[in-house]
Length: 333
Image (cartoon, rainbow, N blue to C red; front, side, top):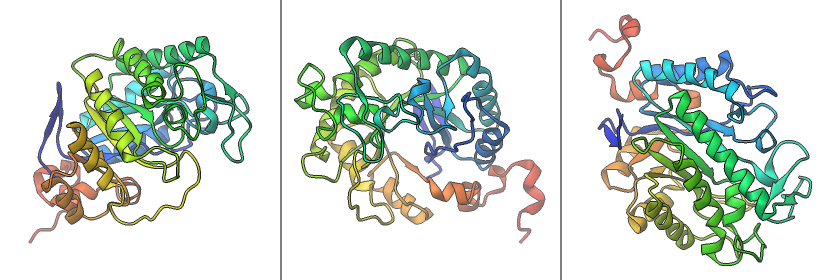
C-alpha cells in the first residue's frame, strides 16, 4: 500500500488514489473555489498518493451539473494551477479528469452519438461527423489547459454513461457510419480523443482513461469488450486505466466491498496494463489483499476519503508521514 509507483516521469508516493468525485461547487463559470482548495488540500495533507480532480468539463454544454469545474476556457487555468501547486507541495501527485456528459449533461443542449434520451433527460442531438471533430478539438484544448495548469496526470472520462461511454455502448450508439456498429467503430471516437489529447499532453506525463467495464444489461458492454478496448488504448500509448462500471442505463447491481475489483483485475491481466481498482473499499486489509495479489496497481477510496481525509495517515501511523504541524497529536507511547 505504501510502496511508491513511477508512471513515466511522475513518482506517486503510495498506491492510494482519491478518485474523481463531483463537488457541485464551482458555479456557472466553472472556476475553482476556496471549497476545492480546502477539499483537495486536506487529502493532500492526509498523504493520498494520487488525487484526481472531479469531472471537469471540456465544453460548457458538457457539464454534468450546474456546479461542475470547467476547463473550456483559458481563464480557468489559474485557479486549477493554484490547487495543483498546493497539493503537490504536500507530497501528492495530482491529476485531473476531463469530461463531457453527452446526453447526461446539465441543461437542454444535449449531444450524443444517437438521438436516444437517457431516462428523464431531453432527447439529445445526434452529432454529425463535422460536429464530432469539433468536440474532439474541445478535448485537445482541455489537455493543453491541463498541461499549462501543471497537472501530473490526465484522465479521460470514458465511463458512467457520459459521452465517450455513449459511443462505446451499443445500448446508446445506433449509428450506421464509421462511429457505430462494430466495437472497432464504436471505440473510434475514444481513440480520436486520445490522439487529440496526446498532441497537447506531455509525453513524459501519464495518460489515464476511466472506463465502465460492463453495462450490466443484455446487449451492453461486457468485460470481454472492455479488455479489447483496453488493448487498443494500450497500443495508443495510454498508461493507466481506471476501472468502474455501469451508468449507461439503470440496472440492478449487486454491490459490496470491492465489487468492481474483478473488472480491474480482468483488464490488468487481459490487456497487460496498469489499473486502478475502486468500489466500496474501506479497509487497509482489503487494499493490501488487492495489491499483494496483483489484482490492480492502485486502489481508489471514494466515499471513504470523503469521510476521512486522513485515512492514509491512520493506516500507517508513522511519525515521518504525518505533517510536522500535527506531531503534537501523535500518541506518545
